[in-house]
Image 1 (cartoon, helix red, strand yellow):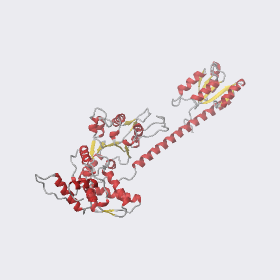
Image 2 (cartoon, one colour):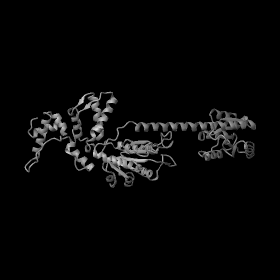
Image 3 (tube, rainbow, N blue to C red):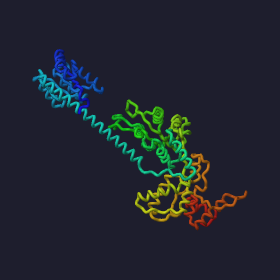
Image 4 (tube, helix red, strand yellow):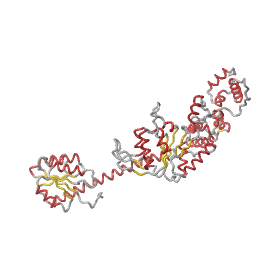
Length: 508
């Protein structure tokens, strides 16, 4: 099927004789849309003027061989190089055989006709050439559409694969997460942009998914992207898409994540990693509700909610005069206020120990099923030990531990001694996390110390060493002298425990 089946074939005729041009226009003007020019240079100029203009391109170029200064064979050769889509017909006499043969051999000529021409025969030749050109153009259009559709489908499949895999649900057992859930329910009913703030691994994406699942946009896509995982040079194309030919390697049009999330929710994790140029584009998109794909001359409307997440203090970053010593980009204050319409602080796992079992058990079951292993049974004592762990890696660390238990303890009962927890946070790490979270303190019970250690109220002469000695002695007694278990419960490495026992004069 032709792209425009009822449109007349557009013919460009070049001849340096005025009367011949008039005859050609009179003979063929009723059947075709004819334009006549007096020279090869004028023909090339007409082709250039029409190139790229929708519906204005010529279908067929007809040229006389004998023109001065540019012969018809040279005109067709140049047209072949610059305007290959147009079909080329050469009018020639017997004496022009050598030039004609050369043009035919080089592929510059679709057809030729001898002069003086036979009107009906030339009309049929022009009509066949025009139809051939339109069929080729239609075929190119369909192939381009198919390539674009395939590229779009591949992009959709990638996003669905990235975002549609089963995820654990948002677990609410602790008072800290109950407050988060209240905020989730309140903001989900609105269309406000949300900024999730919390340490790495606390489950910010789960909170974002929960907002989407409870919102009027839940039938749309939830599309997630960690900006820290994208090279800076690909961020713009990945988020906003690009048109075909926008840059080297852009062989087909591709929709960006903004368009794929249209009607739904776009979750941008690690928003603090966005470079200044991308921050400006994000701000414009949020303000105008339009995006400009790379290489496009037209904007595209979008309708989606943005949920961003960060483990940084973006307000502090925004107040910096320039880049930090670490090379972190300065964050735009106007973008911050666009994103943080409804900020939600997601607490670290050490501040909600009540959630450890509720999160960990489903993780353990899932890992066991996935690996085809018998489900281990975690004892209450082991869960209590896990609840006292500091979890510097937060929910991600818990997930890692559950997978490790599924691998090494399949079908077995897991006691505290089997957990093999890494040393808890040292003083320097604790101080760093307190500064970042602003919590001011980390309860001792959450750093691994037992809750049933008994200490008398110290008098004025009590030293710290005597208190430490009492704690270590009671812990060793509780674990029947097992230094490995005592060290894990205290959040210490075995070497550190042995060193302290030696310093305090306790039997090691």
